Image (cartoon, helix red, strand yellow):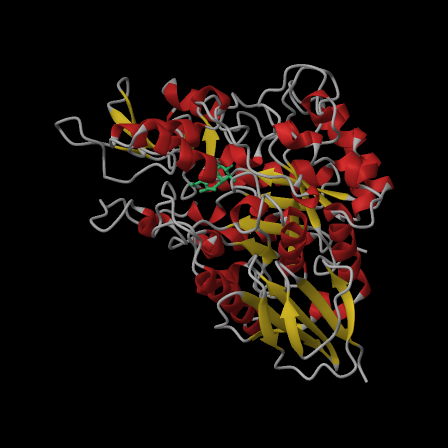
Length: 550
Ligand code: TEU
């Protein structure tokens, strides 16, 4: 069954998933070894982060060859084994296509550097100011200016991320054709899913300096973006109705997403947007410590639910990925209410209209890393920002406090399989340290336990398959301005779902605006929840109420 609206995708940051060859780094063989676990959870797709040859400056998002496997992670034969073994269990693979940029070690960039004009035009080069200033003031997402000077050429190339991640020139038709070949290469291997990294940044508009910001308004959802996606789809995945696609949309607008992920627009199946995950930022600044804004979170989530639905477009719904802190640490409770809050957060996402994504470890309630020194961090963005924040005059302790909350490494600590050394992830020294709480929070302790976070996720995934209203129903918010309850309803041909969540540890009374006559409780995170119009919600209490069509 491959209707993506009925499906759940599991994101496997395999480098931290399971190490099958004892070198401290997770690999493709490690994913194969754990397929039965994923089958038990019930997921339909595995999104694999990039496993292509790469200098690993940005953990594989700096691709040096799109059509091969990095020997650190296995071989093409290992990939094929994984694909076949997954298929035996009804699971399909989704590959991560990083098409906004390549590694500077990619053959194309190397040829460009060596003076080959044809390949020079694969990238974006500009002249700087006579005084040695870069072509404009755009900032890299990882900090610093977004241009790198190459003395031999007397020109600068654009890198919206690390200097070793050079932006591709999508205006050049040859670039677009080469990238189409990459998709066809993996399609020929039977791949039925693709995730496109920061794909709404590929069409650059003008190269003006930005007097209002960091430059993103000139290249986000740029002038030819819909044309480029349409063309890519028509030439590759759009020819196979079984393939599903998701675009990672950085700082996008909903209006653009209607087209990126419209049912009949010929672009992508669905989109990741991130506005709901900036509610603990100040504007676009994430390196700050502010409590999350609950009403803003609800308003953003709900407006995307209704807006996308009204335009017959489809969301990917998620809290977590390899770039985000752990959700239970972020919006839930790591302490006394760890389990109920982790379950509540899972319920909120899985009952929405959209395809849910589970990021490895989320299904067992893994928490933030809790790192205390810079040498524990591996992520280029985190390390850069340590230095940027220190240079701004922040005390070291304050910088660590900020990193502990916002660093991408919070998501990247190894999967906690059991209570043994290194959480059962590896027999060697892991490339990034395991959270010491693996003795308490681990998969072995949760699989098969009827009260565990894992079992709750398993039930949520099963409910989507069982109840059409979850997959296909309309969405409407309930009591949207309530300061601590997140509630909504879903409807499909007389069938109805009511989802009620206390987002806080404080108990609260809540009166349901829907007449609950005939409803039963499908799922809750307390053993004795009852169906009542006037509810007294306990800490993080979460209920999924259902009434069949009459
Ligand atoms: O991330 C896109 C992105 O802009 C942010 O997630 C960014 O990494 C950061 O969180 C901004 O504060 C994608 C990938 O998911 C990420 O891992 C890569 O580093 C990035 O693109 C570059 O390929």
